Length: 265
Image (cartoon, rainbow, N blue to C red):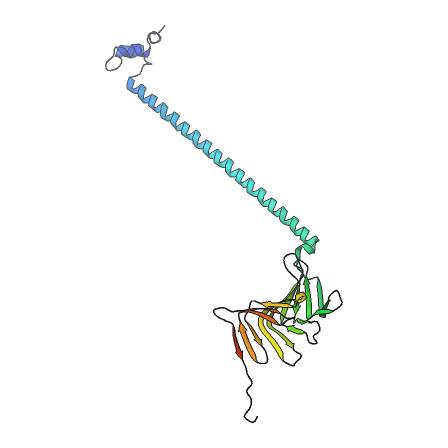
């Protein structure tokens, strides 16, 4: 058997200061110097480290690729779901036009009037307009050029109220039945003695069942001998009582117009 098989590398290198002798190299050619062995070990470790880094990079690249693929699939699913929902909604709207045009008017009346009586058959009010337009979603009736008559029991002349536009709000658990008027609102009544009371304002809310009216806009009340201005008003038209409120810009003021006798008299 060759000598190198009986002599491990450590045994041959133990007695050598500067490396194996010539004789040792001749009989053990497989033995290398310590420096060469260390270089090869370091080189092997470097190769392993590079292989590990390569594997880590490949693993990260694979993970990123998997995540990107899943994200693309998720986006495609969401887009398809949105298209499907849009198609279903569009089909429902086309099959049922009432869902698409919920607040389209369902009733028109031209040159019509609404007359209200009490339980005894006494005339209470009458609402006339050039056009009534009813909207079913809100149950509101728009009025074009409305004119209202509020009758007072045992009085020959009613209150006459007119404006450019308005709307009729039905009775509900949140409000009373009201008529809202705006744009050049004018309310007037001719009394038995021939005098007249005129109310002008930009907007007026009328409670026809109560013969009551109120306004949060500036009002002017004109009688035969006075002109009163206020920032808001509430009026009980049956009794002719007015509650007036003022503000910093429009206090309550009354100007009396007294007719003076002429010198000829």
